[in-house]
Amino acid sequence: MTLEAALPDLAALLRRRGAHLAEALDVETARARAATSAAIAEAFPAFEFLRDTVLGRIDGRLDDGVSRDLLDRLVADGILTPGPRPIVLLADAERYVRGGWLEEHIGLSALAAGADEVRIGQQIDWTARGFRGENEIDTIARFGERLVFVSAKAMRSRLARHDARHRERLMAALQEADNLVDHFGDPSSAVALVVTTDLWDEARRSSRYEQLHGKAAALGVTLVTLETVARHNLVETLGRLGRAR
Image (cartoon, rainbow, N blue to C red; front, side, top):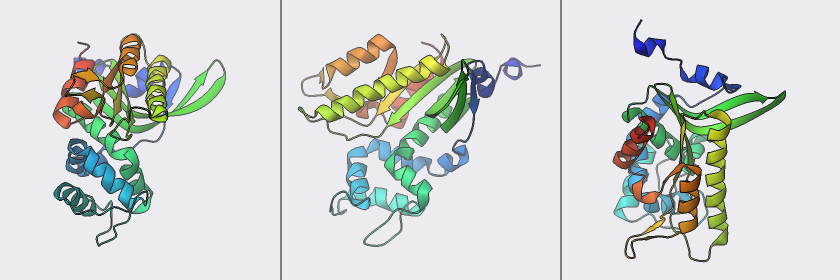
């Protein structure tokens, strides 16, 4: 028997915490649109404008080169209909546009980083001291016997100076990620929060939300922001978390 064959799988590791796997996204579905997800991560502000236009949040014109390229990719993948007024197709396509692309991007990045198993959009049923509940975890990756939990939040790219609601959402997302690993992980587990907000001021070389960075450091949650959400950066980060270094 090989060492890999002797290792418990992801489901077995979660059962130790009273949790059981339910539905999840088929990884092959994510693979089929991997290039589109990576392109969105590379140019999220342009996609943000495209998304808000398609969903009717703003009355925008998709006439710049980056937006048109993303639009063409989404049409080719069957996410949007072609034509002058593209619309979202079906429930899965709407999930993808609203933020599912980020979950898929993270899951595929974890596989590229050497994860042995990855679950995307994983539904979890659990019991604790006789109580039952359920959660959805955006991405879970197994590296050997080490679990890496990742929470994905496709939020506005720009953090306005006095936008208290955006800051509250970011802080709540951080607490949510920490709660996930506390509930379903063990002392060897790691957790990351991936957000699409620009939280680093390059000109001043300083954080745009120092308290969030500080709280993430205190909780042991790796914070990935818009500046480092591209595939090569994310693969490096997840690989480091999976190898515990």
